[in-house]
Image (tube, rainbow, N blue to C red; front, side, top):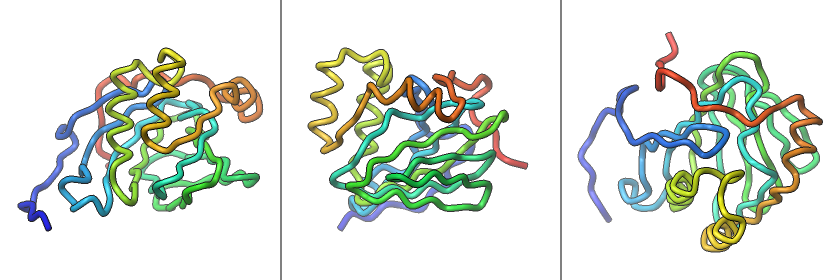
Amino acid sequence: MQTTAPRIIGPSDAQEGFLGSIGVRFMVDGAEADQRFSLVEHPMSPRALAAPLHLHTREDEYSYVLQGRMGALLGDDVVEAGPGDLVFKPRNQWHTFWNAGDEPCRILEIISPAGFEQFFRELDALGGAMAADPEALARLNERYGQEMQIDSVPELVQRFGLRIGERLAGGWTPVA
């Protein structure tokens, strides 16, 4: 078992990236938590779709809303969550999520077990899901045990009044 020294991660700490429609800030890597979980922050611009419809085969995700409104399609259910709410996205369930409001939204994404945070690093390097070479994206999804329906984006954008998000200017600002 790996022992990690205690640390504080401030608002300007941690590596940041952009996944093509939402941001990512790497807060706790799996290696730091003996692969039990990882933690990232996802800042989302107003009305931004986070990802195409997708399914994880290896991990569960928990989205804790810090700021704004997060919408999610979980199987056939549409939910909306606000600050202090936790949304459980179990493995093997088709899902996606988005900023459901006209103000920025920030969520903490807990991934258990760890490992999928590395997918975000590699996706950032490819320029995001929409810009990535389709074959490279398919290989990335396969390596991480994820299925993704890129062709779901236009229907999701229309159905929920969304758009492809933009990188938020000014970095990550703590909620007052």
